[in-house]
Image (cartoon, rainbow, N blue to C red):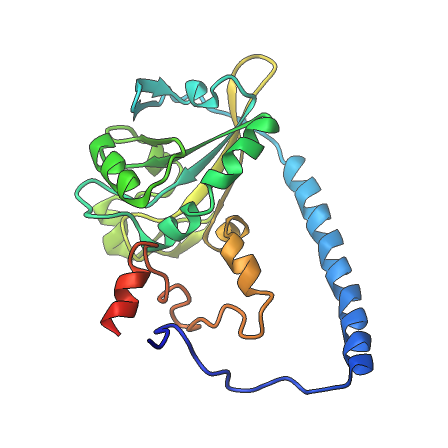
Length: 248
């Protein structure tokens, strides 16, 4: 059966001798090292960003009962929150957020070893979250912000008026929004005073760093092979690819 995602490359790189290939590879290595050094500098600058205290007493619904933002740290000093696009009444979570979230479970033990807790947060009810989580087979912590202003405060959920306007404050500027939910990630830390501080948030293409599959695709000849007008159109929930192949 033909792979429905298979495509034919529109062009092929030059075919050269082993010696020429090695020379080209060594030349490109210099650029890769420059990129790695720049990435290290950006990471250092990110860690140097100022912190802002979180005074809002958010209370989330979890499988173990109500939990505060501070309790989501689970005894650690750092917390990563993934803002997963799943609102009340949705039949399933966002395909793109699901693509990102397929990479989380394997990272959790390593994050814990470095004093970092992780949770996803969605505006949907806990029952809706638990149902979709079971379907996807995920085990990472995932809580509901339903009934709180958390999603709105962190600019990943929007009011009907904002959606109707078509533009609002997202990704640290006035940008187009296409739905009442958008993705993001926020980082928090416990200060020496015991308070919770927001240290970082990122949205849009800033979330690429979370997607190991993209890092692998960037290594192969066709790259991501996406439609520039709709880059993530090809993505499916991981339990839907087989159905797509069967339908083809």
